[in-house]
Image (cartoon, rainbow, N blue to C red; front, side, top):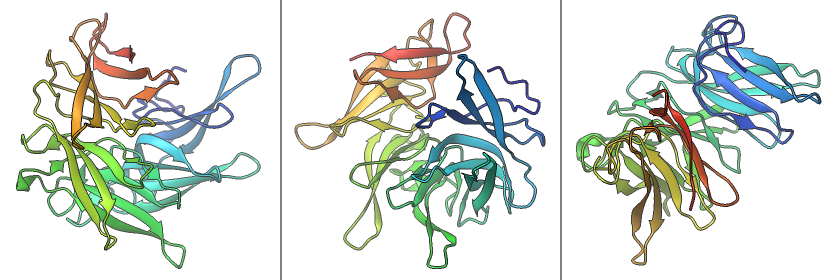
Length: 324
């Protein structure tokens, strides 16, 4: 599929999501009939071709969003959820739900409009995550009382309306907390939320890996698993995490590392029960790539796959594999 930036959309920003039938779903940042982005589907055909369909054209009119960002996710009923960077009631982005009828007509409902009021976050760059109870979790890069982003939860109240709760307001001024989360959240098997920030932390500007878990009083508490220094451990992670069956986490840092070109890392509990980083690969900045900014995927063998923003033969990025 080659986007034309016409009615088909252009500049896809987020990863592809695959459903149980092998259909591919994604979003484009711009284009579509109104120019503000699309949600699309690519369906495999019996003749080995793919059929492209735009499921929604964003308009930024009313409460509709614009510039969809990050991945979309499905719930158990087949409804899909996503986020937009702009648009909505206040112009600062939305979380939306799309459902389909028996004629394959998709309808979009805006569940939340972000507001630049120093309480809510705004301008999310990552898609939402769903827990087993149907609650929606996500992060916004900006906003909150400290202007450094938030982690939010959307849940239905007794009237069936979606209500936002702030899980955390990032506060880099304290010298420890992170700021400006960009990647999606990972909901662990323990129900905790795991993710990264692109800045903040003990070293000031290079980001953290965080965990949020409910305490005995049902309040969310933050644990910082790693603070990046932009040295050998990397810096500025711009993507979320993935986990293996043993509970270790894997991700990318867009800068730092042995060659200053970014790295792939693993974070796991050591024998002393503390989280420790292992660098799996240091990018050299040449044909192997430079600035990994995407989240990783893994296969059954434990190999990791991702992309770099720059580097490669044409200096326009690479697709890479890191094997155990």
